[in-house]
Image (cartoon, rainbow over all chains, first blue to last red; front, side, top):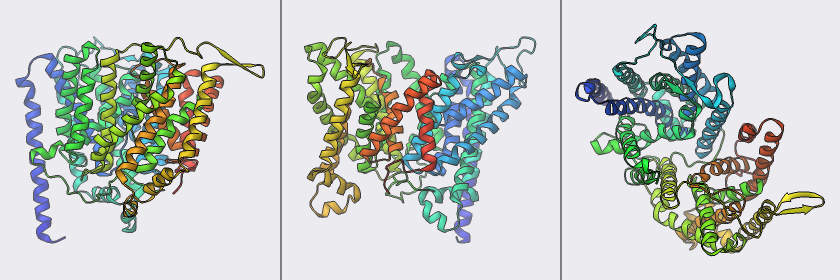
Length: 345
Length: 276
């Protein structure tokens, strides 16, 4: 790499960081313009899912391992933090990092058998792992099984940042969700420029070539999985505090895994902005169509949503972010990143 | 039950083995087949058993149509091809589910009267519900038919196209035609499975998801693209399900079969009968 191209890259990275700061600052000021509860709730959910999608992007986008079981990490993060709170009296400000740590470790544990598989085999294995987790949690009495857990609002403490409980004003959750999004954004930004990022993209493009160049393929995937799972777990804990009630259905369902992956995939997989753009389009759209059309129980919302996914995937395979003039890496591996035969990686 | 799983999985396996496309709308095809059987029965009273060719034909047409309208396009996008095909079939699945809810409503329905309903078969003193036995037999027959097809000229063309999709074009095989037929055949297989399933299982727009998951596990367990693998894995999965339900807890029956799958994959990542 020549010195000149090196400075261009450095300049571009700095520009992206500044753009990121501007966008996040605008998002932080959003509550000043939006006052009704419904819209604020929608914004918080969108921010959270943008964060989830960005966390997914670390593994699915940069490293090319399409995980369709990320709900497992959301659920584990949510349950660890909630159980610590309910049974141990540990404040969720600490609990969410414990949740993230457990989720990250779990991602390593899941990765150990699953990263032997590649392409579709890996994707299906992650679906199955997620489903096993879901079924086990549904039947695990100690964590209230299918009944779920209510996170109590302790009146004696009142609204508190330490305990992450806010009854009167939900605004702090906006800040919290935005912080989560910022953390995932910065992680992705760091990944793009780091040594890890380069080896992950090499693993994604061509694992055999990467290995021949001395990239430790298995370790690269494990590192990506741990970071991705850990961030998702932290997000899960925040989600649990925000919603105030968790059960396996809401935080571990297979549908959730798809909901996490979709914004990243449709927004632009393996890009810094894709997950944000994808979440900003998809989450409000699905929420709005559900609340306006879903009530009829006639499935119109599902039809629109499904058609949208098919349409975007076919017409904008490089992601919606490219519509905004955001640079997307040129197609190189035309044979497809995923369609590979199974082999030990 | 295992045989039904096997047949559903065989359809999926056919499509995957052929062109490296995992059809995430497979469960929804099964659901449509069940609805087709149910609606025909409701309208004409025609027994599901007699409907088999009709539903299979319908699903065949649907499979070809999906390939022509969507999959051809998904396979020719310049970016992220692997992800695009996953999410195109996934979006299709959501769309079909929504459309089914729109057209048929969300209730659980079932075929209450047929040649098979509520009868039991007496095999050497063991009483078994007739619909399940008949389904097993039909699935075995369908399997034999599939294996027979794979031995014909067409089957060999399929196999050749799978091996090297560009080389076959040189010897005059039309790739799109073969792939289209492969999709049709895969969907028709599901049509047979769905019709038989409808004789003893409730019909609803959401019935597909559960069977689809099992189908993926079965296919991955048996080895993608292997019909024998799908058959053996289907039976194995069905048995594991029953035994887990019997010995441990009915609530954990799915965990049991998924655990078997994970175990096998750790030892043999390509599945039991997977080639390559």
